[in-house]
Length: 485
Image (cartoon, rainbow, N blue to C red; front, side, top):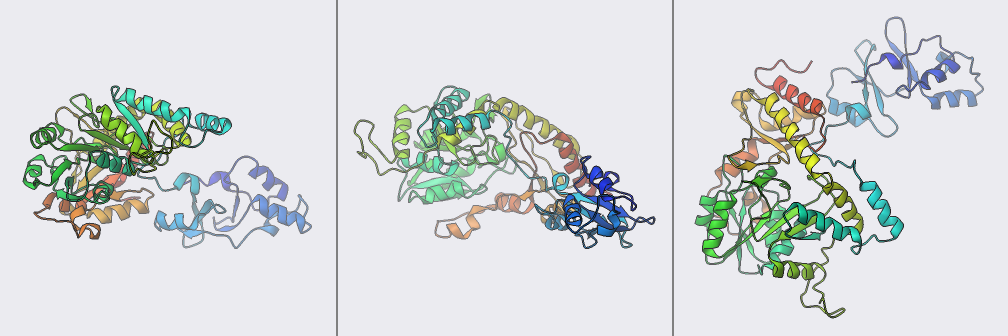
Protein backbone atom coordinates (compact mmCIF):
# COMPACT_ATOMS: atom_id res chain seq x y z
CA UNK A 1 0.00 0.00 0.00
CA UNK A 2 1.11 3.55 -0.68
CA UNK A 3 0.92 6.39 1.85
CA UNK A 4 -1.93 8.81 1.07
CA UNK A 5 -0.73 12.11 2.54
CA UNK A 6 1.20 13.18 -0.56
CA UNK A 7 -1.89 12.75 -2.72
CA UNK A 8 -4.27 14.85 -0.60
CA UNK A 9 -5.23 18.40 -1.61
CA UNK A 10 -7.35 20.88 0.41
CA UNK A 11 -10.91 21.29 -0.88
CA UNK A 12 -10.34 25.05 -1.27
CA UNK A 13 -7.44 24.54 -3.72
CA UNK A 14 -7.48 26.33 -7.08
CA UNK A 15 -6.72 24.60 -10.35
CA UNK A 16 -3.32 26.30 -10.35
CA UNK A 17 -2.55 24.91 -6.88
CA UNK A 18 -3.61 21.44 -7.96
CA UNK A 19 -1.27 21.68 -10.96
CA UNK A 20 1.58 22.68 -8.65
CA UNK A 21 0.69 19.77 -6.38
CA UNK A 22 0.76 17.28 -9.25
CA UNK A 23 4.05 18.72 -10.46
CA UNK A 24 5.71 17.66 -7.19
CA UNK A 25 5.76 14.06 -8.36
CA UNK A 26 2.77 12.58 -6.60
CA UNK A 27 0.84 9.54 -7.80
CA UNK A 28 -0.43 11.55 -10.76
CA UNK A 29 -3.68 12.38 -9.04
CA UNK A 30 -4.89 14.78 -6.37
CA UNK A 31 -7.41 13.45 -3.86
CA UNK A 32 -9.96 15.61 -2.06
CA UNK A 33 -11.66 14.66 1.20
CA UNK A 34 -14.00 16.58 3.49
CA UNK A 35 -13.47 17.35 7.17
CA UNK A 36 -14.77 13.88 8.10
CA UNK A 37 -12.20 12.20 5.85
CA UNK A 38 -14.78 11.16 3.27
CA UNK A 39 -13.33 11.03 -0.24
CA UNK A 40 -15.21 13.54 -2.41
CA UNK A 41 -13.35 13.23 -5.68
CA UNK A 42 -10.02 13.29 -7.48
CA UNK A 43 -8.29 15.26 -10.19
CA UNK A 44 -5.56 14.46 -12.70
CA UNK A 45 -3.76 16.68 -15.17
CA UNK A 46 -6.24 15.42 -17.76
CA UNK A 47 -9.12 16.71 -15.63
CA UNK A 48 -7.42 20.11 -15.42
CA UNK A 49 -6.98 20.26 -19.20
CA UNK A 50 -10.63 19.43 -19.73
CA UNK A 51 -11.65 22.12 -17.22
CA UNK A 52 -9.57 24.78 -19.00
CA UNK A 53 -10.93 23.74 -22.40
CA UNK A 54 -14.44 24.19 -21.00
CA UNK A 55 -13.62 27.82 -20.06
CA UNK A 56 -12.22 27.51 -16.54
CA UNK A 57 -9.49 29.81 -15.21
CA UNK A 58 -6.46 28.51 -13.33
CA UNK A 59 -7.66 30.59 -10.38
CA UNK A 60 -11.04 28.84 -10.25
CA UNK A 61 -11.71 26.43 -7.39
CA UNK A 62 -10.84 22.87 -8.30
CA UNK A 63 -13.81 21.48 -6.37
CA UNK A 64 -16.13 22.64 -9.15
CA UNK A 65 -14.36 20.39 -11.65
CA UNK A 66 -13.64 17.27 -9.57
CA UNK A 67 -13.99 13.82 -11.05
CA UNK A 68 -16.62 12.40 -8.71
CA UNK A 69 -17.24 9.25 -10.74
CA UNK A 70 -13.83 7.68 -10.21
CA UNK A 71 -12.73 4.06 -9.93
CA UNK A 72 -12.21 2.97 -6.33
CA UNK A 73 -12.67 -0.08 -4.12
CA UNK A 74 -13.62 -1.06 -0.59
CA UNK A 75 -11.14 -1.88 2.16
CA UNK A 76 -10.70 -5.50 3.24
CA UNK A 77 -10.92 -7.09 -0.18
CA UNK A 78 -8.18 -9.39 -1.56
CA UNK A 79 -5.27 -7.69 -3.30
CA UNK A 80 -5.94 -9.97 -6.27
CA UNK A 81 -9.28 -8.15 -6.71
CA UNK A 82 -7.55 -4.76 -6.52
CA UNK A 83 -5.00 -5.81 -9.15
CA UNK A 84 -7.77 -6.73 -11.59
CA UNK A 85 -9.05 -3.13 -11.39
CA UNK A 86 -5.67 -1.67 -12.38
CA UNK A 87 -4.65 -1.02 -15.97
CA UNK A 88 -2.30 1.11 -18.04
CA UNK A 89 -4.76 4.00 -17.53
CA UNK A 90 -5.60 3.32 -13.87
CA UNK A 91 -2.38 2.77 -11.96
CA UNK A 92 -3.54 4.00 -8.53
CA UNK A 93 -6.71 2.77 -6.84
CA UNK A 94 -8.22 4.70 -3.88
CA UNK A 95 -9.37 2.36 -1.10
CA UNK A 96 -12.24 3.53 1.11
CA UNK A 97 -14.10 2.12 4.11
CA UNK A 98 -17.87 1.65 4.46
CA UNK A 99 -18.30 5.34 5.29
CA UNK A 100 -16.41 6.40 2.18
CA UNK A 101 -13.35 7.52 4.15
CA UNK A 102 -10.04 7.26 2.34
CA UNK A 103 -8.01 4.43 3.88
CA UNK A 104 -5.19 3.83 1.41
CA UNK A 105 -4.07 3.77 -2.21
CA UNK A 106 -3.30 0.55 -4.07
CA UNK A 107 -0.64 1.26 -6.70
CA UNK A 108 0.34 -0.65 -9.83
CA UNK A 109 4.08 -0.14 -9.41
CA UNK A 110 4.20 -0.88 -5.71
CA UNK A 111 1.57 -3.60 -5.47
CA UNK A 112 2.10 -5.66 -8.65
CA UNK A 113 2.19 -9.40 -8.06
CA UNK A 114 5.60 -10.56 -6.82
CA UNK A 115 6.49 -13.14 -9.50
CA UNK A 116 7.83 -16.61 -8.85
CA UNK A 117 10.74 -15.79 -11.17
CA UNK A 118 11.74 -12.96 -13.47
CA UNK A 119 14.77 -12.12 -15.63
CA UNK A 120 17.66 -9.92 -14.49
CA UNK A 121 18.71 -7.68 -17.38
CA UNK A 122 20.99 -5.10 -15.79
CA UNK A 123 24.25 -5.86 -17.58
CA UNK A 124 25.41 -5.35 -21.17
CA UNK A 125 22.28 -6.86 -22.74
CA UNK A 126 21.05 -3.64 -24.37
CA UNK A 127 24.54 -2.67 -25.53
CA UNK A 128 25.20 -6.00 -27.21
CA UNK A 129 21.74 -6.28 -28.80
CA UNK A 130 22.11 -2.73 -30.13
CA UNK A 131 25.45 -3.73 -31.62
CA UNK A 132 23.73 -6.60 -33.45
CA UNK A 133 21.15 -4.26 -34.90
CA UNK A 134 23.67 -1.59 -35.89
CA UNK A 135 25.91 -4.19 -37.53
CA UNK A 136 22.91 -5.86 -39.24
CA UNK A 137 23.89 -9.30 -37.88
CA UNK A 138 20.62 -10.42 -36.32
CA UNK A 139 20.07 -14.05 -37.39
CA UNK A 140 22.01 -17.18 -36.42
CA UNK A 141 25.20 -15.99 -38.11
CA UNK A 142 27.16 -13.53 -36.01
CA UNK A 143 30.00 -13.14 -33.56
CA UNK A 144 27.80 -13.19 -30.46
CA UNK A 145 26.74 -16.79 -31.09
CA UNK A 146 30.39 -17.87 -31.03
CA UNK A 147 31.19 -15.64 -28.04
CA UNK A 148 28.25 -16.99 -26.07
CA UNK A 149 29.24 -20.59 -26.81
CA UNK A 150 32.85 -19.84 -25.83
CA UNK A 151 31.78 -18.21 -22.56
CA UNK A 152 29.53 -21.16 -21.72
CA UNK A 153 32.27 -23.63 -22.61
CA UNK A 154 34.81 -21.82 -20.43
CA UNK A 155 32.42 -21.85 -17.48
CA UNK A 156 32.03 -25.61 -17.89
CA UNK A 157 35.72 -26.37 -18.05
CA UNK A 158 36.32 -26.18 -21.78
CA UNK A 159 33.85 -28.78 -23.04
CA UNK A 160 32.18 -28.38 -26.43
CA UNK A 161 29.17 -26.05 -26.29
CA UNK A 162 26.51 -25.53 -28.95
CA UNK A 163 23.60 -23.08 -28.82
CA UNK A 164 20.06 -24.21 -29.60
CA UNK A 165 16.69 -22.51 -29.97
CA UNK A 166 15.37 -23.82 -26.63
CA UNK A 167 16.04 -26.24 -23.80
CA UNK A 168 13.54 -28.62 -25.36
CA UNK A 169 15.31 -28.64 -28.72
CA UNK A 170 18.60 -29.15 -26.87
CA UNK A 171 17.23 -32.36 -25.34
CA UNK A 172 15.74 -33.54 -28.65
CA UNK A 173 18.97 -32.80 -30.50
CA UNK A 174 21.00 -34.78 -27.96
CA UNK A 175 18.70 -37.81 -28.15
CA UNK A 176 18.65 -37.84 -31.96
CA UNK A 177 22.45 -37.47 -32.12
CA UNK A 178 22.78 -40.47 -29.80
CA UNK A 179 20.67 -42.52 -32.18
CA UNK A 180 17.59 -42.82 -29.98
CA UNK A 181 14.55 -43.78 -32.07
CA UNK A 182 11.54 -46.04 -32.55
CA UNK A 183 11.59 -49.18 -30.41
CA UNK A 184 13.96 -47.67 -27.84
CA UNK A 185 13.19 -46.78 -24.24
CA UNK A 186 14.52 -43.85 -22.23
CA UNK A 187 14.35 -43.69 -18.42
CA UNK A 188 12.72 -40.41 -17.29
CA UNK A 189 11.84 -39.20 -13.77
CA UNK A 190 8.12 -39.02 -13.04
CA UNK A 191 8.48 -35.60 -11.38
CA UNK A 192 9.62 -33.05 -13.95
CA UNK A 193 8.35 -30.64 -16.57
CA UNK A 194 6.75 -32.39 -19.55
CA UNK A 195 9.51 -31.43 -22.01
CA UNK A 196 11.75 -34.14 -20.54
CA UNK A 197 9.27 -36.78 -21.72
CA UNK A 198 7.98 -35.02 -24.84
CA UNK A 199 11.39 -35.07 -26.50
CA UNK A 200 11.58 -38.85 -26.05
CA UNK A 201 8.15 -39.26 -27.66
CA UNK A 202 9.24 -37.08 -30.60
CA UNK A 203 12.18 -39.39 -31.34
CA UNK A 204 9.74 -42.29 -31.68
CA UNK A 205 11.06 -43.87 -28.49
CA UNK A 206 9.09 -44.53 -25.32
CA UNK A 207 9.68 -42.69 -22.02
CA UNK A 208 9.74 -45.08 -19.07
CA UNK A 209 8.80 -43.24 -15.90
CA UNK A 210 10.62 -43.86 -12.63
CA UNK A 211 9.69 -42.47 -9.23
CA UNK A 212 11.87 -39.92 -7.46
CA UNK A 213 13.59 -39.82 -4.08
CA UNK A 214 11.62 -38.39 -1.14
CA UNK A 215 14.81 -36.67 0.05
CA UNK A 216 15.99 -34.74 -3.01
CA UNK A 217 13.06 -35.17 -5.47
CA UNK A 218 15.30 -36.33 -8.33
CA UNK A 219 15.19 -39.76 -9.97
CA UNK A 220 15.77 -42.66 -7.56
CA UNK A 221 18.78 -44.71 -8.82
CA UNK A 222 17.66 -47.96 -7.17
CA UNK A 223 14.43 -47.83 -9.18
CA UNK A 224 16.27 -47.22 -12.45
CA UNK A 225 17.67 -50.75 -12.36
CA UNK A 226 14.18 -52.21 -11.92
CA UNK A 227 12.96 -50.28 -14.98
CA UNK A 228 15.71 -51.45 -17.35
CA UNK A 229 14.83 -53.70 -20.29
CA UNK A 230 16.74 -54.85 -23.39
CA UNK A 231 15.20 -51.83 -25.17
CA UNK A 232 16.62 -49.25 -22.73
CA UNK A 233 19.08 -46.99 -24.54
CA UNK A 234 19.42 -43.93 -22.31
CA UNK A 235 18.75 -42.36 -18.92
CA UNK A 236 17.52 -38.77 -18.79
CA UNK A 237 18.09 -37.49 -15.23
CA UNK A 238 16.62 -34.09 -14.38
CA UNK A 239 18.31 -31.81 -11.84
CA UNK A 240 14.93 -30.71 -10.55
CA UNK A 241 14.53 -27.17 -9.17
CA UNK A 242 18.32 -26.87 -9.28
CA UNK A 243 19.01 -29.94 -7.08
CA UNK A 244 21.58 -32.28 -8.69
CA UNK A 245 20.50 -35.86 -9.31
CA UNK A 246 22.59 -38.78 -7.97
CA UNK A 247 24.95 -38.75 -10.93
CA UNK A 248 27.62 -41.10 -9.52
CA UNK A 249 25.10 -43.93 -9.16
CA UNK A 250 23.43 -43.08 -12.46
CA UNK A 251 26.74 -43.08 -14.33
CA UNK A 252 27.67 -46.45 -12.77
CA UNK A 253 24.40 -47.95 -14.03
CA UNK A 254 24.96 -46.39 -17.46
CA UNK A 255 28.48 -47.79 -17.69
CA UNK A 256 27.31 -51.25 -16.64
CA UNK A 257 24.56 -51.38 -19.26
CA UNK A 258 26.23 -49.22 -21.93
CA UNK A 259 23.58 -46.49 -21.81
CA UNK A 260 23.69 -42.85 -22.86
CA UNK A 261 23.06 -40.26 -20.13
CA UNK A 262 21.35 -37.05 -21.25
CA UNK A 263 21.40 -34.56 -18.36
CA UNK A 264 18.44 -32.19 -18.22
CA UNK A 265 20.08 -29.10 -16.72
CA UNK A 266 17.29 -26.68 -17.64
CA UNK A 267 17.02 -25.64 -13.99
CA UNK A 268 20.53 -26.34 -12.69
CA UNK A 269 23.07 -24.06 -14.37
CA UNK A 270 25.85 -23.69 -11.79
CA UNK A 271 24.84 -26.59 -9.53
CA UNK A 272 27.65 -28.93 -8.49
CA UNK A 273 28.34 -32.44 -7.22
CA UNK A 274 31.63 -32.64 -5.34
CA UNK A 275 32.80 -29.61 -7.28
CA UNK A 276 31.74 -30.88 -10.71
CA UNK A 277 29.13 -28.90 -12.60
CA UNK A 278 25.90 -30.56 -13.64
CA UNK A 279 25.89 -31.17 -17.36
CA UNK A 280 29.53 -32.29 -17.48
CA UNK A 281 29.10 -35.82 -16.13
CA UNK A 282 26.75 -37.43 -18.64
CA UNK A 283 27.03 -37.96 -22.38
CA UNK A 284 25.39 -34.59 -23.06
CA UNK A 285 24.21 -31.76 -20.81
CA UNK A 286 21.19 -29.74 -21.95
CA UNK A 287 20.27 -26.24 -20.74
CA UNK A 288 17.35 -23.85 -21.06
CA UNK A 289 17.52 -20.06 -21.26
CA UNK A 290 13.81 -19.32 -20.94
CA UNK A 291 13.01 -16.02 -19.24
CA UNK A 292 12.63 -17.56 -15.77
CA UNK A 293 15.89 -19.51 -15.80
CA UNK A 294 19.22 -18.62 -14.11
CA UNK A 295 20.39 -16.91 -17.29
CA UNK A 296 18.07 -16.04 -20.14
CA UNK A 297 18.01 -15.32 -23.84
CA UNK A 298 14.22 -15.03 -23.85
CA UNK A 299 14.00 -18.43 -25.49
CA UNK A 300 17.09 -20.51 -26.08
CA UNK A 301 19.21 -23.45 -25.02
CA UNK A 302 22.63 -25.08 -25.08
CA UNK A 303 24.14 -28.55 -25.30
CA UNK A 304 27.55 -29.38 -23.85
CA UNK A 305 29.60 -32.54 -24.32
CA UNK A 306 33.18 -33.77 -24.06
CA UNK A 307 32.65 -36.06 -27.08
CA UNK A 308 33.98 -34.19 -30.12
CA UNK A 309 32.39 -36.51 -32.68
CA UNK A 310 29.00 -36.19 -30.99
CA UNK A 311 29.42 -32.40 -30.87
CA UNK A 312 30.00 -32.21 -34.62
CA UNK A 313 27.01 -34.46 -35.28
CA UNK A 314 24.76 -32.25 -33.12
CA UNK A 315 26.15 -29.21 -34.92
CA UNK A 316 25.12 -30.66 -38.28
CA UNK A 317 21.72 -31.84 -37.08
CA UNK A 318 21.02 -28.41 -35.61
CA UNK A 319 21.76 -26.79 -39.01
CA UNK A 320 19.38 -28.84 -41.20
CA UNK A 321 21.93 -31.68 -41.45
CA UNK A 322 24.03 -29.62 -43.86
CA UNK A 323 27.39 -30.95 -44.97
CA UNK A 324 30.40 -28.93 -43.84
CA UNK A 325 32.24 -29.55 -47.09
CA UNK A 326 29.56 -29.19 -49.76
CA UNK A 327 27.03 -26.37 -50.01
CA UNK A 328 23.35 -27.30 -49.81
CA UNK A 329 24.25 -30.96 -49.37
CA UNK A 330 22.53 -32.73 -46.48
CA UNK A 331 24.15 -35.62 -44.64
CA UNK A 332 21.18 -35.89 -42.25
CA UNK A 333 17.51 -34.93 -42.26
CA UNK A 334 18.22 -32.27 -39.67
CA UNK A 335 16.45 -29.42 -37.94
CA UNK A 336 16.55 -25.66 -37.65
CA UNK A 337 17.38 -25.49 -33.94
CA UNK A 338 19.67 -22.46 -34.12
CA UNK A 339 19.86 -19.48 -31.77
CA UNK A 340 19.91 -15.96 -33.23
CA UNK A 341 22.78 -13.53 -32.83
CA UNK A 342 20.36 -11.19 -31.01
CA UNK A 343 19.55 -13.87 -28.44
CA UNK A 344 23.19 -14.86 -28.08
CA UNK A 345 24.07 -11.22 -27.38
CA UNK A 346 21.73 -11.31 -24.40
CA UNK A 347 23.19 -14.67 -23.37
CA UNK A 348 26.75 -13.38 -23.42
CA UNK A 349 25.78 -10.42 -21.23
CA UNK A 350 24.06 -12.85 -18.87
CA UNK A 351 27.11 -15.11 -18.62
CA UNK A 352 29.20 -12.09 -17.66
CA UNK A 353 27.03 -11.92 -14.52
CA UNK A 354 26.72 -15.64 -13.73
CA UNK A 355 28.83 -15.61 -10.56
CA UNK A 356 26.86 -12.66 -9.20
CA UNK A 357 23.58 -14.40 -10.03
CA UNK A 358 24.62 -17.57 -8.23
CA UNK A 359 25.90 -15.78 -5.13
CA UNK A 360 22.72 -13.68 -4.96
CA UNK A 361 20.64 -16.84 -5.07
CA UNK A 362 22.52 -18.20 -2.08
CA UNK A 363 21.53 -15.11 -0.10
CA UNK A 364 17.89 -15.59 -1.06
CA UNK A 365 18.03 -19.23 0.04
CA UNK A 366 19.66 -18.35 3.36
CA UNK A 367 16.89 -15.80 4.01
CA UNK A 368 14.21 -18.39 3.26
CA UNK A 369 15.89 -20.95 5.50
CA UNK A 370 16.09 -18.39 8.28
CA UNK A 371 12.52 -17.17 7.90
CA UNK A 372 10.73 -20.50 7.40
CA UNK A 373 12.63 -22.77 9.77
CA UNK A 374 10.49 -23.82 12.71
CA UNK A 375 7.09 -23.22 11.10
CA UNK A 376 5.06 -26.38 11.85
CA UNK A 377 3.96 -28.27 8.77
CA UNK A 378 6.62 -26.95 6.40
CA UNK A 379 9.30 -29.30 5.08
CA UNK A 380 12.26 -27.30 3.77
CA UNK A 381 14.74 -28.58 1.16
CA UNK A 382 18.06 -29.87 2.42
CA UNK A 383 21.38 -30.33 0.64
CA UNK A 384 23.18 -33.65 0.93
CA UNK A 385 26.92 -33.85 1.53
CA UNK A 386 28.92 -32.77 -1.52
CA UNK A 387 25.84 -31.32 -3.22
CA UNK A 388 25.59 -27.64 -4.14
CA UNK A 389 22.08 -26.80 -5.36
CA UNK A 390 21.29 -23.49 -7.04
CA UNK A 391 17.65 -23.60 -5.87
CA UNK A 392 16.23 -22.48 -9.20
CA UNK A 393 12.92 -22.23 -7.37
CA UNK A 394 12.86 -22.43 -3.58
CA UNK A 395 10.32 -25.21 -3.07
CA UNK A 396 8.83 -26.50 0.19
CA UNK A 397 6.31 -29.17 1.16
CA UNK A 398 3.14 -28.37 3.09
CA UNK A 399 1.61 -30.76 5.63
CA UNK A 400 -2.05 -29.75 5.80
CA UNK A 401 -2.70 -31.08 9.30
CA UNK A 402 0.31 -29.43 10.92
CA UNK A 403 0.36 -26.22 8.89
CA UNK A 404 -3.38 -25.61 9.01
CA UNK A 405 -3.87 -25.12 5.25
CA UNK A 406 -3.38 -27.40 2.28
CA UNK A 407 -0.97 -26.43 -0.48
CA UNK A 408 -3.59 -25.04 -2.85
CA UNK A 409 -5.15 -22.91 -0.10
CA UNK A 410 -1.72 -21.49 0.73
CA UNK A 411 -1.19 -20.59 -2.94
CA UNK A 412 -4.54 -18.76 -2.93
CA UNK A 413 -3.80 -16.91 0.30
CA UNK A 414 -0.40 -15.78 -0.96
CA UNK A 415 -1.96 -14.57 -4.20
CA UNK A 416 -4.43 -12.47 -2.22
CA UNK A 417 -1.56 -10.53 -0.64
CA UNK A 418 0.32 -10.06 -3.92
CA UNK A 419 2.69 -13.04 -3.85
CA UNK A 420 2.83 -15.47 -6.75
CA UNK A 421 3.69 -19.12 -6.17
CA UNK A 422 3.14 -22.32 -8.06
CA UNK A 423 2.47 -26.00 -7.40
CA UNK A 424 4.98 -28.81 -7.77
CA UNK A 425 5.17 -30.40 -11.22
CA UNK A 426 2.36 -32.97 -11.63
CA UNK A 427 3.46 -36.60 -11.97
CA UNK A 428 3.92 -37.44 -15.65
CA UNK A 429 2.70 -41.05 -15.58
CA UNK A 430 -0.89 -39.97 -14.92
CA UNK A 431 -1.13 -37.33 -17.65
CA UNK A 432 -3.17 -37.88 -20.84
CA UNK A 433 -0.22 -37.10 -23.12
CA UNK A 434 1.51 -40.34 -22.09
CA UNK A 435 -1.40 -42.78 -21.83
CA UNK A 436 0.01 -44.72 -24.79
CA UNK A 437 3.31 -45.21 -22.99
CA UNK A 438 3.82 -48.37 -20.99
CA UNK A 439 3.45 -47.34 -17.35
CA UNK A 440 3.98 -49.90 -14.61
CA UNK A 441 4.80 -49.83 -10.94
CA UNK A 442 3.91 -47.29 -8.27
CA UNK A 443 4.88 -43.64 -7.98
CA UNK A 444 4.06 -42.73 -4.36
CA UNK A 445 6.67 -39.99 -4.02
CA UNK A 446 5.82 -38.18 -7.26
CA UNK A 447 2.12 -38.39 -6.44
CA UNK A 448 2.69 -36.99 -2.95
CA UNK A 449 4.93 -34.17 -4.17
CA UNK A 450 2.37 -33.00 -6.72
CA UNK A 451 -0.13 -32.56 -3.89
CA UNK A 452 2.00 -30.82 -1.26
CA UNK A 453 4.87 -29.04 -3.05
CA UNK A 454 4.87 -25.25 -3.52
CA UNK A 455 7.53 -23.11 -5.23
CA UNK A 456 8.10 -19.63 -3.81
CA UNK A 457 9.47 -16.47 -5.49
CA UNK A 458 13.14 -16.98 -6.28
CA UNK A 459 15.41 -14.97 -8.53
CA UNK A 460 18.87 -13.66 -9.20
CA UNK A 461 18.09 -10.19 -7.88
CA UNK A 462 15.07 -10.80 -5.64
CA UNK A 463 15.32 -8.21 -2.83
CA UNK A 464 15.79 -9.83 0.57
CA UNK A 465 13.01 -7.67 2.01
CA UNK A 466 10.64 -9.39 -0.43
CA UNK A 467 11.83 -12.79 0.81
CA UNK A 468 11.16 -11.66 4.38
CA UNK A 469 7.68 -10.55 3.32
CA UNK A 470 6.96 -14.00 1.86
CA UNK A 471 8.19 -15.70 5.03
CA UNK A 472 6.16 -13.36 7.24
CA UNK A 473 2.99 -14.06 5.26
CA UNK A 474 3.48 -17.82 5.30
CA UNK A 475 4.03 -17.76 9.04
CA UNK A 476 0.92 -15.61 9.49
CA UNK A 477 -1.16 -18.07 7.46
CA UNK A 478 0.04 -21.08 9.46
CA UNK A 479 -1.97 -22.69 12.25
CA UNK A 480 -0.01 -20.81 14.91
CA UNK A 481 0.08 -17.53 12.97
CA UNK A 482 -1.88 -14.40 13.71
CA UNK A 483 -3.01 -13.68 10.16
CA UNK A 484 -2.31 -10.64 7.98
CA UNK A 485 -3.35 -7.37 9.52
